[in-house]
Image (cartoon, rainbow, N blue to C red; front, side, top):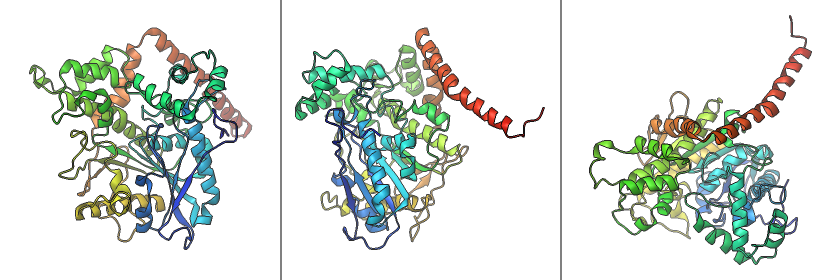
Length: 505
């Protein structure tokens, strides 16, 4: 297991685990279900010590043990050169080690090591997804909750090894290691760089060179993340367990703040059609050529208004980037698990309290809007949001769904009284989704046509419209998978069948 920091001597690992209990450290009782919260922050920031990860409200509502963890971030956690010198994913290995330690020791804190749920938001949700496809973590938890991020989130995984390597050397140049010509030299130089200088180079300067992507995130290293998550889900190479997965209605506002940075201070943001197309080219993850851009426009533009030169396309961009980055990946994961016969609770958070003041004003039901109700900020002395009676009841209902799921795997069973609305699982067919508002309701098949567009049609179009060299490269990857993975497995199964004596001619 890789637990050492690639920029520090081996054996130096910083993992801080914070336990919250309504009763304090002297836990009364034992065998309580366990929440492990993995913080978000784009793999460059955040902390399990933040007020949003307090956890006291959750444990006061229901008998659970809540754990928040920390892991290495930015260059310290995810700088990768695509070779054994710096293979990447050190932050994920930190998380893995934390899960292992908690599993082995949580009984001393009143927790049940056989009933552990890992949950995360944004990059934390992506992290939960990665543990679901990383066999090294499977023995340490039993359920997963992925909010506004999962293993299919395009912001959470760099699929291009060369891009990851280029980012590593870019950080090196920005940190004063421009003379490094290979991975070994780069690592040796970076180990001598002042910590603050390296953080500035990775988290500020390198970030400014990108559009939608975040440099220094998890990569396919062949060890922790062994392959493209899409392929692993297709082949059912994931932990077979119950999951909860979903996103907010306007999650993509966060990306729009980078795409339309000049619109941040505007009360009434605006984008004409040409600017809209430019942002689709530069800030969507699927872009490879103008055929893709035009297809996205065809799907989202309201063509009856197209001839009006004053038509505003700004909110169409938020809609499509929310679909691509958050909503459709959630649907993809939900389908993979549901079609494997597992319990899936799929949600779509759409509520914004009347009178809410957001920065920017057009943020909407944006990224993180739901977190305050999942952990009930109102009882957190560090935040003190002064919930209305409606908000408090809404938050209580939300926490019941989450703690029930952690207790029993069923979002409706485990609390007394039960939630006021029965949340039916997501199935195929059926596609049940819970609309998370104070008036909870079922919205089966929410945005189904857009899910089909991003998860199926556009992927085929990317392949069909790619240059031949790229198509050939993809074919070779698939052929190698078949030759090295599928064919040997088939041969072994066939040989076992022959040896069993059941084979007759």
